[in-house]
Picture 1 (tube, rainbow, N blue to C red):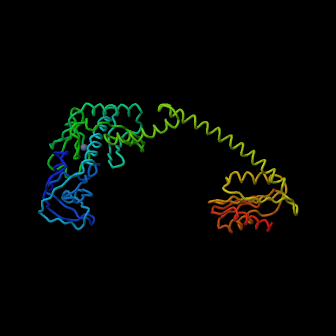
Picture 2: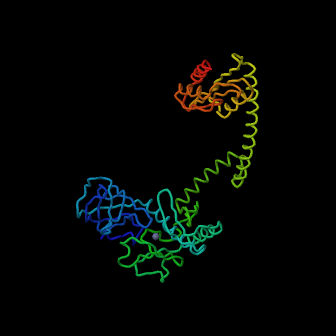
Length: 403
Ligand SMILES: [Zn+2]
């Protein structure tokens, strides 16, 4: 079985090894080495990446049958031979990020046990997010703050983090969890954060808690009887702070205020917008009243009814509906209206005392544009296709001849 050197030293990123097997994994070339510092995906922590003799290692997995570590290579077929000596390099930036997030997770998990009696039931780490699920659903803001404060206290007190393989159980104060098979053969690997936490774990960790730098909970989400917490440690916390600082700086410059005033100012703007929208709606309605009066005034009456046809460009369909109903609320009026644009729309309406069928008339007109629609004998609408003002006016004029 591959000797797992990362157990002893998570900081060593360059090593030599001998190829013991060349195989494939999901049709990609894979190497088994006699010893490795590459961490394979397991226990919620993703694998390392790096190179073997300058060929990229894309993935590292544990083979189910014999727990061998497979180093999946970028190039297939591989130029390697069995028993060949190779030089490997691990991507330190990715490794150290995993060490920070993962050790931070151990601390946060223990912090929630101590401050809220909440246990971690799962852990997830990916390039985009780090989360834990707690077996508690009603965590208060105070509990969250207390756990975060305790975690940061442990980080700042720069405690040692050590791992030893030994016989251990829960009586020993060691937090147990579901472990990969290869970890339970000759004793358990117990990770100890000086005077704070003991957990069975096979991952890579920082040597002192101070290297985590900072831990910040950024999101909580209730999931049934559990709570999912998203948090960031170290470099990720710093870049999150940078992103948020940039956004808030732009907002405060824009709004000419200090950052604690932003929520109040946003609320004020929202209220002002609501009032302005209400006023605008009222004014639009008044304008439509005038428009309807003008159109009725200018229209001519033939065969016992007044016909009004009009087409617009990109006009709000709600406003068009309002215009149609204002025009036809009195007696003896037929209004054939339309608006052009990406979603052209036709509205045909008539006074209640008349008999023409607007539904049938509209269906035909909108069909000529390639759209769909229909309605009642007195009111119909439809459209949904792109059309110019000229096209809209043409189908309206044609419909008018069929009245
Ligand atoms: Zn761990």
